[in-house]
Image (cartoon, rainbow, N blue to C red; front, side, top):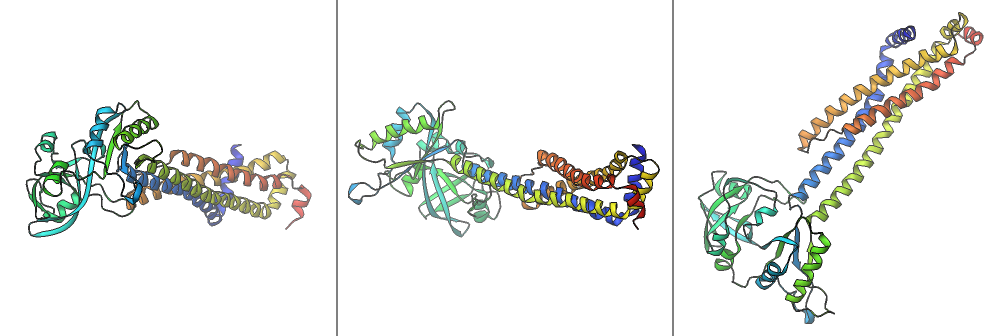
Length: 400
């Protein structure tokens, strides 16, 4: 065994360029497989995190459909909110939301900024944290306090990146609100929309100074209780809202439910399919690397035909010759897979940092690539080794 390993080693180092190119083929195959799976996992994590920023375990209630006579859909108002809060037993809390775009002015600069008017529980539905300052509370909602919390982009646009807490923003030249908090940056949505450009204030303040007391909600977000299924929550809320809207049994619902979780699951599913597709494409390169080992070993058998004949003539058994060439294939395969694993991991880390994706080092993919790559190399290396072992000693000695 040791003698076969020594012979295989001497044979490989006798042709360093050929050996290096053979190893390189399998290295690229293994590295490509690992990198592709890493890219797919990283992209999947980035996309899913974008959807998770919209809220996790959240259901949103929106108006839908027109009423008889072509009238607009029944708006979501205070009566609906009171009915939901009084009758629901499957929901932790409700968060009414009014959204508009307003003209915000500060330090002589004016910008159109998305505005959200809501309640303190709004913060509990969004996976965001305050960078500085605090949040408005129930007392601010009850007293229609002129306070607001802003996103990181809004703070930069209006105050040039300076500390914004304590500053005053004029909204529509009708309301001057004091900034009490600034959120940490979130980033951009998959559509490119800046998720950090917004102003958030109590909905009672918005209704009092910028709209009317009857201004409807654009949506009512809610957090189901941990022990309540989504189907049970929707069934209960549907029953409550149909009574609140005085709908007859034959009338269609004039509201609809949406959940970021649905989009997250779809995105996760699509990304998983694409990751599998990338892995399948990259796996082809592993086969190419294995075929490269087979070709080189066939050339080696042809070049060393006389050597094989001499070894057979002096008593080497076919099994020993098979072992010698198979060891060469094993060495090539192991060198290629180890180098490929290192290269693929390095590429995955560099690309993840460059694109600011979650760093995903697919340990399972590394193991699969190494096993598959080594197995492919050994399998394709066995065929030339078997051919060498079956050579007739007399024919081998006669061949030039």
